[in-house]
Image (cartoon, rainbow over the protein chains, first blue to last red):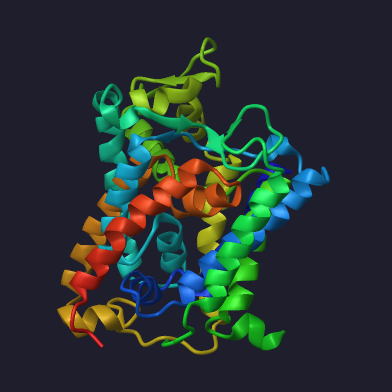
Length: 186
Length: 194
Protein backbone atom coordinates (compact mmCIF):
# COMPACT_ATOMS: atom_id res chain seq x y z
CA UNK A 1 0.00 0.00 0.00
CA UNK A 2 2.83 2.37 0.94
CA UNK A 3 4.51 1.76 -2.39
CA UNK A 4 1.33 2.54 -4.34
CA UNK A 5 0.98 5.78 -2.40
CA UNK A 6 4.64 6.55 -3.08
CA UNK A 7 4.02 6.18 -6.81
CA UNK A 8 0.82 8.27 -6.86
CA UNK A 9 2.10 11.04 -4.57
CA UNK A 10 5.52 11.12 -6.26
CA UNK A 11 4.01 11.39 -9.74
CA UNK A 12 1.69 14.15 -8.56
CA UNK A 13 4.48 16.08 -6.81
CA UNK A 14 6.83 15.82 -9.79
CA UNK A 15 4.08 16.89 -12.19
CA UNK A 16 3.19 19.88 -10.00
CA UNK A 17 6.80 21.02 -9.50
CA UNK A 18 7.22 21.13 -13.27
CA UNK A 19 3.92 23.00 -13.78
CA UNK A 20 4.57 25.67 -11.17
CA UNK A 21 7.90 26.51 -12.82
CA UNK A 22 10.05 25.34 -9.86
CA UNK A 23 12.03 22.93 -12.07
CA UNK A 24 13.03 25.78 -14.37
CA UNK A 25 16.38 27.33 -13.28
CA UNK A 26 15.37 30.50 -15.13
CA UNK A 27 12.50 30.97 -12.66
CA UNK A 28 14.59 30.06 -9.60
CA UNK A 29 17.32 32.55 -10.54
CA UNK A 30 14.67 35.15 -11.36
CA UNK A 31 13.30 34.76 -7.84
CA UNK A 32 16.69 34.76 -6.09
CA UNK A 33 17.84 37.96 -7.84
CA UNK A 34 14.48 39.57 -6.95
CA UNK A 35 13.48 40.12 -10.58
CA UNK A 36 10.64 37.66 -11.11
CA UNK A 37 8.49 36.96 -8.06
CA UNK A 38 6.32 34.21 -9.59
CA UNK A 39 7.96 31.41 -7.59
CA UNK A 40 8.18 33.47 -4.41
CA UNK A 41 4.42 34.04 -4.64
CA UNK A 42 3.83 30.34 -5.30
CA UNK A 43 5.99 29.18 -2.36
CA UNK A 44 4.54 31.68 0.11
CA UNK A 45 0.98 30.90 -0.96
CA UNK A 46 1.62 27.14 -0.78
CA UNK A 47 3.15 27.31 2.71
CA UNK A 48 0.40 29.65 3.95
CA UNK A 49 -2.48 27.55 2.70
CA UNK A 50 -1.01 24.16 3.69
CA UNK A 51 -0.12 25.54 7.12
CA UNK A 52 -3.68 26.69 7.78
CA UNK A 53 -5.41 23.59 6.41
CA UNK A 54 -2.97 21.23 8.19
CA UNK A 55 -3.75 22.72 11.60
CA UNK A 56 -7.49 22.72 10.92
CA UNK A 57 -7.31 19.03 9.98
CA UNK A 58 -5.12 18.28 13.03
CA UNK A 59 -7.57 20.07 15.33
CA UNK A 60 -10.54 18.15 13.90
CA UNK A 61 -8.64 14.86 14.07
CA UNK A 62 -8.85 14.23 10.32
CA UNK A 63 -5.05 14.13 10.13
CA UNK A 64 -3.41 11.89 12.72
CA UNK A 65 -0.81 13.91 14.66
CA UNK A 66 1.41 10.82 14.47
CA UNK A 67 2.04 11.75 10.82
CA UNK A 68 3.73 14.98 11.92
CA UNK A 69 7.50 14.76 11.60
CA UNK A 70 9.54 17.69 12.86
CA UNK A 71 13.25 18.03 12.14
CA UNK A 72 15.69 19.14 14.84
CA UNK A 73 17.06 22.68 15.07
CA UNK A 74 20.84 22.92 15.50
CA UNK A 75 23.62 25.21 14.27
CA UNK A 76 24.17 23.08 11.15
CA UNK A 77 20.64 23.83 9.94
CA UNK A 78 21.61 27.47 9.38
CA UNK A 79 25.17 26.77 8.17
CA UNK A 80 23.94 23.96 5.89
CA UNK A 81 21.19 26.28 4.65
CA UNK A 82 23.84 28.86 3.74
CA UNK A 83 25.97 26.32 1.80
CA UNK A 84 22.78 25.07 0.15
CA UNK A 85 21.88 28.66 -0.77
CA UNK A 86 25.23 29.18 -2.49
CA UNK A 87 24.79 26.04 -4.60
CA UNK A 88 21.15 26.90 -5.29
CA UNK A 89 22.08 30.33 -6.68
CA UNK A 90 24.98 28.95 -8.75
CA UNK A 91 22.96 26.10 -10.29
CA UNK A 92 19.33 27.19 -10.13
CA UNK A 93 18.33 23.74 -8.89
CA UNK A 94 17.51 22.17 -5.53
CA UNK A 95 17.46 18.39 -4.94
CA UNK A 96 13.78 17.82 -5.80
CA UNK A 97 13.51 20.28 -8.67
CA UNK A 98 16.80 19.00 -10.15
CA UNK A 99 15.36 15.49 -10.38
CA UNK A 100 12.09 16.73 -11.88
CA UNK A 101 13.98 18.93 -14.36
CA UNK A 102 16.05 15.93 -15.45
CA UNK A 103 12.81 13.99 -15.97
CA UNK A 104 11.45 16.86 -18.05
CA UNK A 105 14.56 16.69 -20.27
CA UNK A 106 16.86 19.43 -18.97
CA UNK A 107 20.43 18.37 -19.68
CA UNK A 108 22.07 20.67 -17.12
CA UNK A 109 19.99 18.94 -14.42
CA UNK A 110 21.96 15.75 -15.09
CA UNK A 111 25.27 17.36 -14.15
CA UNK A 112 23.53 18.84 -11.11
CA UNK A 113 22.42 15.35 -10.00
CA UNK A 114 25.92 13.95 -10.58
CA UNK A 115 27.33 16.75 -8.42
CA UNK A 116 24.62 16.10 -5.84
CA UNK A 117 25.52 12.43 -5.58
CA UNK A 118 29.18 13.38 -5.09
CA UNK A 119 28.24 15.99 -2.47
CA UNK A 120 26.08 13.51 -0.57
CA UNK A 121 28.91 10.96 -0.71
CA UNK A 122 31.43 13.51 0.56
CA UNK A 123 29.08 14.27 3.43
CA UNK A 124 28.77 10.57 4.30
CA UNK A 125 32.56 10.47 4.64
CA UNK A 126 32.78 13.76 6.60
CA UNK A 127 29.92 13.08 9.01
CA UNK A 128 31.90 11.17 11.66
CA UNK A 129 34.40 14.02 12.05
CA UNK A 130 31.74 16.77 11.89
CA UNK A 131 29.50 15.15 14.50
CA UNK A 132 31.41 16.32 17.62
CA UNK A 133 31.78 19.90 16.29
CA UNK A 134 29.78 23.04 17.13
CA UNK A 135 27.71 22.42 14.00
CA UNK A 136 25.61 19.96 15.96
CA UNK A 137 25.05 22.23 18.97
CA UNK A 138 21.35 22.32 19.64
CA UNK A 139 19.22 25.38 18.84
CA UNK A 140 15.94 24.20 20.30
CA UNK A 141 15.84 20.62 19.03
CA UNK A 142 12.62 19.23 17.57
CA UNK A 143 10.33 22.17 18.23
CA UNK A 144 7.37 23.83 16.50
CA UNK A 145 5.77 27.26 16.91
CA UNK A 146 2.21 25.89 17.15
CA UNK A 147 1.00 22.88 19.16
CA UNK A 148 0.76 19.88 16.83
CA UNK A 149 -0.74 17.49 19.38
CA UNK A 150 2.18 15.10 18.94
CA UNK A 151 3.97 14.76 22.31
CA UNK A 152 7.28 13.91 20.66
CA UNK A 153 7.74 17.53 19.68
CA UNK A 154 8.16 20.57 21.95
CA UNK A 155 6.15 23.76 21.39
CA UNK A 156 7.48 27.32 21.34
CA UNK A 157 4.10 29.03 21.87
CA UNK A 158 2.11 26.54 23.99
CA UNK A 159 -0.14 29.23 25.51
CA UNK A 160 -1.73 30.25 22.20
CA UNK A 161 -4.22 27.93 20.44
CA UNK A 162 -2.45 26.24 17.51
CA UNK A 163 -5.08 27.37 15.05
CA UNK A 164 -4.44 31.03 15.98
CA UNK A 165 -0.67 30.68 15.47
CA UNK A 166 -1.08 28.79 12.19
CA UNK A 167 -3.85 31.13 11.06
CA UNK A 168 -1.74 34.24 11.68
CA UNK A 169 1.25 32.76 9.85
CA UNK A 170 -1.02 31.77 6.97
CA UNK A 171 -2.50 35.27 6.72
CA UNK A 172 0.95 36.90 6.73
CA UNK A 173 2.37 34.52 4.11
CA UNK A 174 -0.65 34.74 1.82
CA UNK A 175 -0.78 38.53 2.13
CA UNK A 176 2.89 38.81 1.11
CA UNK A 177 2.23 36.40 -1.79
CA UNK A 178 -0.65 38.63 -2.89
CA UNK A 179 1.31 41.87 -2.53
CA UNK A 180 4.53 40.87 -4.35
CA UNK A 181 4.55 42.18 -7.91
CA UNK A 182 3.33 39.74 -10.56
CA UNK A 183 5.86 40.67 -13.23
CA UNK A 184 5.62 37.39 -15.08
CA UNK A 185 8.50 37.00 -17.54
CA UNK A 186 8.69 33.54 -19.03
CA UNK B 1 -9.08 21.51 -17.83
CA UNK B 2 -7.34 20.67 -21.07
CA UNK B 3 -5.14 23.74 -20.98
CA UNK B 4 -4.47 23.09 -17.29
CA UNK B 5 -2.71 19.85 -18.20
CA UNK B 6 -0.96 21.09 -21.34
CA UNK B 7 -0.04 24.68 -20.55
CA UNK B 8 3.61 25.35 -19.80
CA UNK B 9 3.09 27.03 -16.45
CA UNK B 10 0.18 27.65 -14.12
CA UNK B 11 -0.75 31.03 -12.63
CA UNK B 12 0.83 31.72 -9.24
CA UNK B 13 -2.49 31.18 -7.44
CA UNK B 14 -3.22 27.82 -9.07
CA UNK B 15 0.43 26.86 -8.54
CA UNK B 16 0.40 27.78 -4.87
CA UNK B 17 -2.79 25.86 -4.17
CA UNK B 18 -1.61 22.76 -6.09
CA UNK B 19 1.80 22.77 -4.39
CA UNK B 20 0.28 23.32 -0.96
CA UNK B 21 -2.17 20.46 -1.51
CA UNK B 22 0.60 18.10 -2.60
CA UNK B 23 2.50 18.69 0.66
CA UNK B 24 -0.73 18.42 2.66
CA UNK B 25 -1.84 15.21 0.96
CA UNK B 26 1.52 13.57 1.63
CA UNK B 27 1.41 14.34 5.36
CA UNK B 28 -2.26 13.33 5.60
CA UNK B 29 -1.71 9.95 3.92
CA UNK B 30 1.87 9.04 4.85
CA UNK B 31 4.43 11.58 6.10
CA UNK B 32 5.98 14.94 5.12
CA UNK B 33 7.73 15.07 1.74
CA UNK B 34 11.54 15.04 1.73
CA UNK B 35 13.98 14.48 -1.12
CA UNK B 36 17.66 15.08 -0.33
CA UNK B 37 18.08 11.96 1.87
CA UNK B 38 17.54 9.82 -1.22
CA UNK B 39 20.83 11.05 -2.73
CA UNK B 40 22.51 9.39 0.27
CA UNK B 41 20.41 6.25 -0.17
CA UNK B 42 21.39 5.93 -3.85
CA UNK B 43 25.06 6.51 -2.93
CA UNK B 44 24.72 3.88 -0.22
CA UNK B 45 23.27 1.36 -2.71
CA UNK B 46 26.10 1.95 -5.20
CA UNK B 47 28.77 1.88 -2.50
CA UNK B 48 27.35 -1.36 -1.08
CA UNK B 49 27.50 -2.94 -4.54
CA UNK B 50 31.21 -2.19 -4.82
CA UNK B 51 32.04 -2.89 -1.21
CA UNK B 52 29.78 -5.69 0.01
CA UNK B 53 30.48 -5.36 3.71
CA UNK B 54 29.29 -1.74 3.89
CA UNK B 55 25.77 -2.62 5.03
CA UNK B 56 25.08 -5.81 6.98
CA UNK B 57 22.01 -7.35 8.58
CA UNK B 58 22.22 -6.77 12.31
CA UNK B 59 19.44 -7.94 14.59
CA UNK B 60 20.80 -5.81 17.44
CA UNK B 61 20.27 -2.58 15.43
CA UNK B 62 16.92 -0.84 15.84
CA UNK B 63 16.14 -1.02 12.11
CA UNK B 64 17.71 -4.44 11.58
CA UNK B 65 20.71 -3.19 9.58
CA UNK B 66 24.01 -1.61 10.49
CA UNK B 67 26.85 -0.05 8.51
CA UNK B 68 30.55 0.64 8.95
CA UNK B 69 29.80 4.15 7.67
CA UNK B 70 28.77 6.29 10.65
CA UNK B 71 26.26 8.32 8.63
CA UNK B 72 24.43 5.31 7.18
CA UNK B 73 24.47 3.76 10.65
CA UNK B 74 22.84 6.69 12.44
CA UNK B 75 19.31 6.56 13.91
CA UNK B 76 19.51 2.82 14.49
CA UNK B 77 20.61 2.06 10.92
CA UNK B 78 17.69 3.86 9.26
CA UNK B 79 19.60 4.90 6.14
CA UNK B 80 21.45 1.55 6.03
CA UNK B 81 18.10 -0.24 5.95
CA UNK B 82 16.69 1.96 3.19
CA UNK B 83 19.84 1.53 1.08
CA UNK B 84 19.67 -2.25 1.56
CA UNK B 85 15.95 -2.39 0.66
CA UNK B 86 15.41 -0.06 -2.33
CA UNK B 87 11.67 -0.74 -2.56
CA UNK B 88 10.72 1.60 0.25
CA UNK B 89 8.29 4.54 0.32
CA UNK B 90 10.77 7.44 0.25
CA UNK B 91 12.95 6.07 -2.54
CA UNK B 92 10.05 5.07 -4.80
CA UNK B 93 8.48 8.47 -4.17
CA UNK B 94 11.57 10.21 -5.54
CA UNK B 95 11.75 7.92 -8.58
CA UNK B 96 8.06 8.65 -9.26
CA UNK B 97 8.83 12.39 -9.04
CA UNK B 98 11.23 12.08 -11.97
CA UNK B 99 8.53 10.28 -13.98
CA UNK B 100 6.04 13.01 -12.98
CA UNK B 101 8.42 15.62 -14.39
CA UNK B 102 8.84 13.55 -17.56
CA UNK B 103 5.06 13.30 -18.09
CA UNK B 104 4.53 17.01 -17.47
CA UNK B 105 7.36 17.85 -19.87
CA UNK B 106 6.00 15.53 -22.55
CA UNK B 107 2.47 16.90 -22.33
CA UNK B 108 3.64 20.50 -22.41
CA UNK B 109 2.23 22.19 -25.51
CA UNK B 110 4.68 25.08 -25.57
CA UNK B 111 8.16 23.49 -25.58
CA UNK B 112 11.33 25.37 -24.76
CA UNK B 113 14.16 25.67 -27.27
CA UNK B 114 16.74 22.90 -27.36
CA UNK B 115 19.45 25.37 -26.29
CA UNK B 116 17.48 26.54 -23.24
CA UNK B 117 17.15 22.90 -22.12
CA UNK B 118 20.94 22.80 -21.71
CA UNK B 119 21.82 26.41 -20.92
CA UNK B 120 19.00 28.60 -19.47
CA UNK B 121 18.53 31.95 -21.25
CA UNK B 122 19.57 33.98 -18.22
CA UNK B 123 22.81 32.00 -17.92
CA UNK B 124 23.46 32.53 -21.65
CA UNK B 125 23.05 36.28 -21.42
CA UNK B 126 25.73 36.49 -18.71
CA UNK B 127 28.08 33.54 -19.24
CA UNK B 128 27.59 32.61 -22.90
CA UNK B 129 26.29 29.56 -24.70
CA UNK B 130 28.97 27.06 -23.75
CA UNK B 131 27.31 23.91 -22.38
CA UNK B 132 30.59 22.87 -20.72
CA UNK B 133 30.69 25.99 -18.58
CA UNK B 134 27.06 25.52 -17.59
CA UNK B 135 27.58 21.85 -16.69
CA UNK B 136 30.59 22.79 -14.60
CA UNK B 137 28.50 25.29 -12.63
CA UNK B 138 25.55 22.92 -12.12
CA UNK B 139 27.94 20.14 -11.06
CA UNK B 140 29.64 22.34 -8.46
CA UNK B 141 26.24 23.71 -7.45
CA UNK B 142 25.00 20.14 -6.97
CA UNK B 143 27.95 19.27 -4.72
CA UNK B 144 27.29 22.35 -2.55
CA UNK B 145 23.50 21.86 -2.48
CA UNK B 146 23.73 18.28 -1.24
CA UNK B 147 26.50 18.93 1.30
CA UNK B 148 24.42 21.83 2.63
CA UNK B 149 21.17 19.85 2.63
CA UNK B 150 22.72 16.90 4.44
CA UNK B 151 24.40 19.12 7.03
CA UNK B 152 21.06 20.87 7.59
CA UNK B 153 19.16 17.57 7.61
CA UNK B 154 16.80 18.52 4.79
CA UNK B 155 16.25 20.67 1.71
CA UNK B 156 13.63 22.90 0.14
CA UNK B 157 11.05 20.10 0.39
CA UNK B 158 11.78 18.74 3.86
CA UNK B 159 12.82 21.92 5.67
CA UNK B 160 11.32 24.85 3.80
CA UNK B 161 7.96 23.49 2.62
CA UNK B 162 7.16 20.56 4.93
CA UNK B 163 8.93 22.19 7.87
CA UNK B 164 7.29 25.60 7.69
CA UNK B 165 3.91 23.97 6.97
CA UNK B 166 4.22 22.27 10.38
CA UNK B 167 5.50 25.55 11.95
CA UNK B 168 8.79 23.79 12.67
CA UNK B 169 11.52 26.13 13.92
CA UNK B 170 14.11 24.25 11.83
CA UNK B 171 12.20 25.12 8.65
CA UNK B 172 12.46 28.81 9.45
CA UNK B 173 16.17 28.60 10.38
CA UNK B 174 16.99 26.73 7.15
CA UNK B 175 15.04 29.22 5.04
CA UNK B 176 16.78 32.20 6.66
CA UNK B 177 20.23 30.61 6.11
CA UNK B 178 19.40 29.74 2.50
CA UNK B 179 18.02 33.06 1.32
CA UNK B 180 20.63 35.08 3.28
CA UNK B 181 23.25 33.62 0.92
CA UNK B 182 21.30 32.74 -2.24
CA UNK B 183 19.81 36.20 -2.81
CA UNK B 184 23.03 38.28 -2.65
CA UNK B 185 24.95 35.64 -4.64
CA UNK B 186 22.30 35.54 -7.39
CA UNK B 187 22.11 39.34 -7.54
CA UNK B 188 25.91 39.60 -7.78
CA UNK B 189 26.26 36.76 -10.32
CA UNK B 190 23.72 38.23 -12.69
CA UNK B 191 24.52 41.91 -12.18
CA UNK B 192 23.77 43.94 -15.29
CA UNK B 193 21.49 41.33 -16.89
CA UNK B 194 18.11 42.66 -17.95
